[in-house]
Amino acid sequence: MPTSVENQRATLFEIFFDLVFVFALTRIIAFMGHPPSFISMGRGALLLLLLWFSWASYTWLSNQARADVGLIRGGTLLAMAALFVAALVIPAAWRTPAGTMAAPLILVGAYIALRAVQIVLYYQVTAHDPRVRFGLRLIAIPIVLAWIPLVLGAVAGGETQTLLWAVSLAVDIGGQRTMLAATGGWRLRSPGHFSERHNLALIIALGESLISVGTGAGTVVTRAPVLVAALLAFVATVCLWRTYFEYVGPAVARTLDQAAARQRDRIAADGYGLAYLLLIVGIIYLALGVEQVVSDLAEERSGRFAGEPLGWPATIALYGGVALYLAGRPLFLWIAVRSAPRAQLAAIGAALVLLPVGRHLSALAALGLVTALLLVVAGHERSTRRPESRR
Image (cartoon, rainbow, N blue to C red; front, side, top):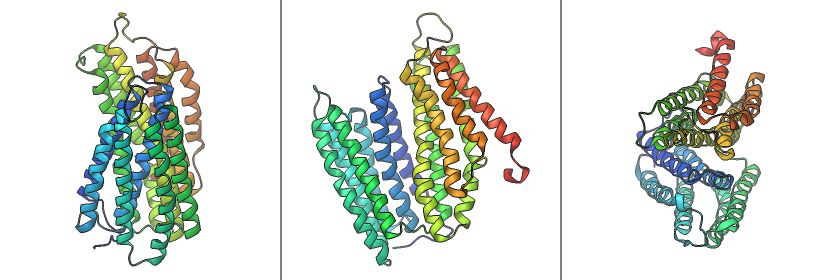
């Protein structure tokens, strides 16, 4: 079984896996947006966490051994099938009093298969390292225990399901981190491969904010306000891309590559594992907000060019998503280099301050305001950056 090397690059097969993951993200947006509510957004966050830590586990796996050959490829294909099935049933993930438990149970079964395959494959590729195998046996304990409330929640449905699935995540994440601390954590083999996989996933996720425009517009794509909203969403996405890939991403990747082994493992686990999650969740919530803006404008019947004000859930998705994304950047930097520009912290505050303002603006104006904020952030960071940091 070929192992990874220090300068390994992401393979096309891994990108294929990432596309299935992003399809699941699309289904989560569909789940939260029909219609958007605080409950659906909270439940969507639970689904995002389940999927993110599943995807991250396979990134660690492919960092240990090539994902496109032999047993790893076959097992990952099975995992992709499980992930695809889980994504298909996500819009019906919560059982209602009048519904059946079929979709939630299918989702849980697919998720369990996804995690179980990864554990088996990781155990196989670490045959040369008894310490890692011992740690994996310990980590498997909270992972398997977390499946119990998942199954019980799928059977119960409603608010009980929400509570039990939150408990499952707490057992899974908390238990894993406790076990990792006791065993010394994972060992990162190829830092370049690890950062590249996460960067590719982020780029694909950014595409969700563009896909959401088409989803919201439906067939009404020639109306002037819809086109304006689409262009604003495009500009906002460009700003998100720039504010990460212009400096933050490369700075952390360089630090990861140059760090000593123990520090490298910490940056990978905490920076890319936790802080990066804020970036992904922020993008998904922003995409949800953009979809609601465009949908409202496409269905606008009052004759107002800019539409009616958004509801609180859509406004919080729009501005809160941007705030989460902006918060992920300084946290990511702090974990990696133990410093973060104060301007990045100010940008988070600005997004939160503008949130109640956006609630009372028309839908198009609310999107325009958050886009203007991102333009200011991107422009300020570009103008104040030292010339050598732009290389």
